[in-house]
Image 1 (tube, rainbow, N blue to C red):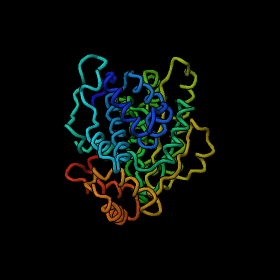
Image 2: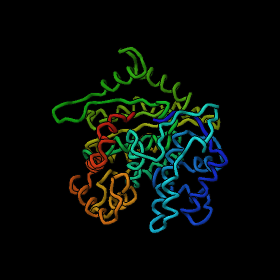
Image 3: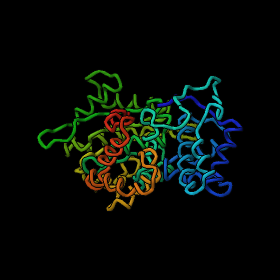
Image 4: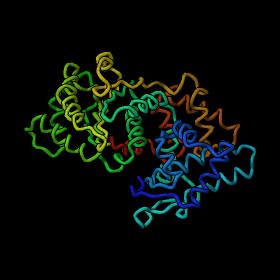
Length: 376
């Protein structure tokens, strides 16, 4: 993760970005047009796009991500255009393009050209691979609510934790970098093992550095105090492993009281968000009870699916856009590579797709290393 310091584009950096955007869109695009384009690839916020283009301060990681996305857009537009291809090749964020708001420039591990440096550009590219239905639904809800809970569900290896971390990284970058996160790790689901709600209370108390014999109310009180200081995000991993009759107790005894207490203090002065992710890694949690709840109590995101029903549906376009990352520069190589990934991933199972892509990009990437780096 890059430094969390705030930076702003210099006049020359802004001119460089605007020149690239004009090359992509054929004119000087509106903020909204750039936002819609970027959202499909990375889900940057509308205000973030506006702030970058107006020279206001943003996180250095945001600048890196936007410049990388623009570089991808230039590559897509440069087919058969040698001069634009050369411009795209040299389009990278350099130290001359931005100033640190605090004075000293953050240290950036940047080479002359973007490479698979510790897997980061690959992770940015992977973030553009599908989950559009879930992302659009999430985006629509958080535009309307500061306090909300989500059930993320699908069968095994469909990328539930990848999506959870991706959503938080993209929409709540500061909270992710500053680790304003509360992660509760339940053991993976097993038909031969029952996990009860007391396990959740114990792990929650431990996360808040409370004693072992504390009340749920004490956890609510300290969570509330954390939220008053800034956005707070909870994630219950392997929610499906919790004993079915006790799943609702997590909401009834902890989340809903916390929601109601926090809602009483919402005002124009408090912009902090309070979010809970319930992660079902097997798809066994019934969704009907959650669909009947208010949004802030629990909202069900669309169920995770394979990356299309055919390799040409989603995967082919992603491989075409990111072919240089996959050491596949020639167009005639695309179809065989797409078919290879499709076959090896059991026809588009998301985590198997990620694993195969990382295998192709070795030694610069590892799907296991990426997964181990999840903060939620």
